[in-house]
Length: 149
Image (cartoon, rainbow, N blue to C red; front, side, top):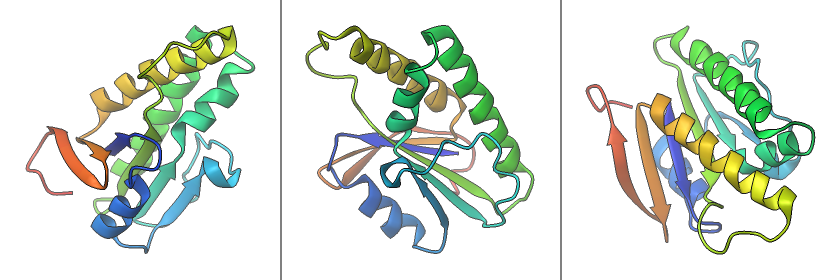
């Protein structure tokens, strides 16, 4: 799994398209697509999940932080099972970093920010590679294995 994060409108989507090409299944929360924990029916070798922070915000509207993280980790584990089921499969997860800056005044936005920070930590821990994109430039902050993605 390759996790990509960075600021809003900093070129994450363009960078992923340049790195991986456009032949992929692309699920985007920005296009009102739902978070899917079960992706077994997807037959593409490359799956891109974009807008993780939006899906996390939806979880925080219904569940407390503990349950959000539990649901999130179940989804990540299912995605990793999908990725490992075929040798050529690759999962790319894109999430905008909303954890910096001023702490929100509203309780629901603080919960969203906290859950997103924890979820990104969980993603980074399980990912083979983690990149931060700022102004269209990447910085790899984690890479395990032989480096082939």
